[in-house]
Length: 215
Image 1: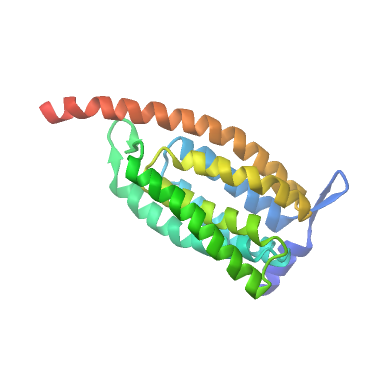
Image 2 (image 1 turned 30 degrees about the vertical axis):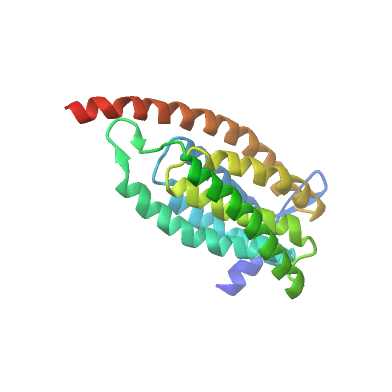
């Protein structure tokens, strides 16, 4: 298995003079598919995400981006939770039940982002696990928060993803992962559309609640 993983890292294609390993290519395409599936609130989002995490862990570890590598482990664990949660919370008409976060939930999201990024950046610095600890930590914590909110069916998870992309694009370019940086740009466009779609569906589901209660 280790030999297969190394082969996926060492081999790939060259685009515009930039080498893209098979691990990075397939991993990022799976991650891109996750955004597409999440927009449509399909449970298949999560098994595809698991495939992406395994491949991208190897990519980021080889690029000495400790935060991004560890992030994949956290995403794997949260993906298992999200898979379970989405299978439990479904609407017969609109699919996975989604909603806007409460005021308290929004404060918690912001607080976790701020405190988590600071703590993890200091940890990465102490361990010398990343050459860019603060942006690496922001992406790590932001990703964990976004996936947790996604598993809860909160519309605001798309906004967290936008904040992650804003830091992720320049970090990926600086790390020489140009294909991943380009994928992050595509992510941003899909995230904006996803936020609009989920926000619209959340309003429709909320409007249906009184009717369901009367029935």
